[in-house]
Length: 350
Ligand code: NAP
Ligand code: ZN
Ligand code: ZN
Image (cartoon, rainbow, N blue to C red):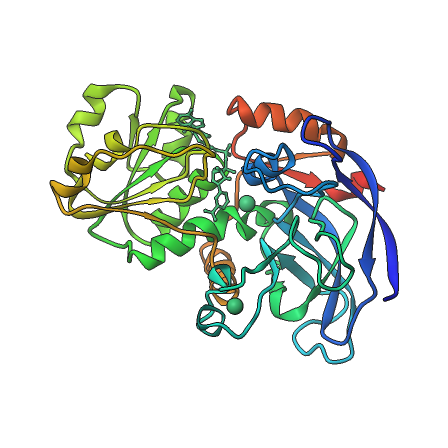
């Protein structure tokens, strides 16, 4: 198959810093859209993967699944996109399209497994897929999203993962007016969770380990903020919440959050720390509580979320960086030193 060489930023080993790499993209096929990448967000999953914290990474890896840019070429059968339009790509670039989940628009739960934007088998070129820390990407139009030109583009990029990963469970568990909803862990995902839960009409309570995020949490839309390391503040909210969205990237005590749920309440995990999280049976039994999980969202739901954000003027709070700052940004992410999403200006890769 014909290919095109482009520049990307990735790494050849878990311990090595990211650097400029040359990678190949396939030539545009009949159903493909080629996108010049303008901005790519940095998700904590990029860091987990680049450092092989989930133990599945195949090197070299080019992370990045919060991609926005401009269409530069379309295949002859492409109907939904035109050259010059804005476009986005999130965590998936393909799926089997035939299983029960794919038919229901739940491509993220595809039976054989969806093809992720990076570090998944590349059925076109062999090897692995390469993500958005790169100049351009070629993706089947069914996995490309429409992006509004009304919002600041760099701040839209994080919606493609942090946005949909928080939107999807909030919708699925029917968060809305009259409900008290906890958001745990105010990073890239958590800060979007606050904005979206508020826009859906819930009473939003932020649970953070960082005093320094108290004022921000209110500005982002929280009705109340709790220091989750203070047992007294936690006790005041015991048995009071309908739903909790847990966006924490590291080990933490699930029981202490489950105890904030009312009878029949649900705590949904979207954060993905590598080690198991112990749960005490009585935290669930006494209160008929549910402990659940959720992965990103389907393609149609991702478009719905992008349209919802355009309508409600919702974007991420971002710090735009050059590609040479990515390694430093990873270190800062580990220290929680980001308010609230790094986004790479891809022009810096030229
Ligand atoms: P992030 O920006 O680094 O935010 C993580 C937040 O977790 C921190 O800001 C901090 O919030 C809290 N935290 C970190 N260490 C903690 C600790 N030891 N104890 C308690 N809280 C701690 O990460 P992100 O990009 O939002 O991603 C969050 C997690 O979601 C990652 O594990 C990522 O891989 C996962 N993820 C899952 C999906 C999915 O489909 N389910 C999609 C994307 C990402 P406070 O300072 O407020 O405490
Ligand atoms: Zn992500
Ligand atoms: Zn499928």
